[in-house]
Length: 217
Ligand SMILES: [Fe+2]
Ligand SMILES: [Fe+2]
Picture: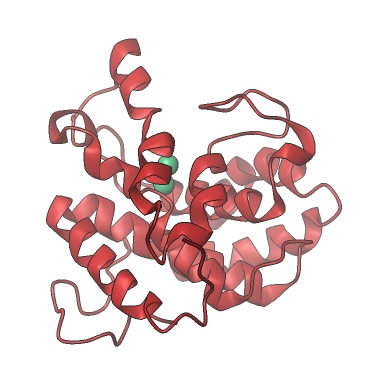
């Protein structure tokens, strides 16, 4: 089943998704919304050669980690570094996510879900794709995903708040994913880093599901 962002069923699907992410846990919920907001900001700030509108980028960010619904909480929320076998399991979330959206209005995000941990240098997962096989849309979500992760507290480490260090951490990924847009993308990311310099992200309306408001950008 194919759909597009003008599909009238999409807001309902996204609201359902948001509830499912929240039910799985605050960490996944906050991460997904922060990634969505950063992806929208990046798509809004400049083209970066990706085909996503800001609205589509927001939706892609919200759904990118949906496969983590299938990962046990003991691994997702483990307050220590993961073992090799736990990492093997968590790497499957890209595949689980593609399976999850199959046949739903969210299926148009399959590529982004499946490819958001692939790297242009071929060192990503789960398929070890490389070069142009890693689409510009997936690269944009990869940058947004990594930015969100840096800005978040995780069970085993504290967030990074200092904008200069955030940009330093992100630069290698940006240089690999968007070699023709490094300066513009890092400038856009600096705005995000400065917005989140002093406190961890709290999405507005956490736990409130009265309607579709807040789901669509
Ligand atoms: Fe992921
Ligand atoms: Fe993620």
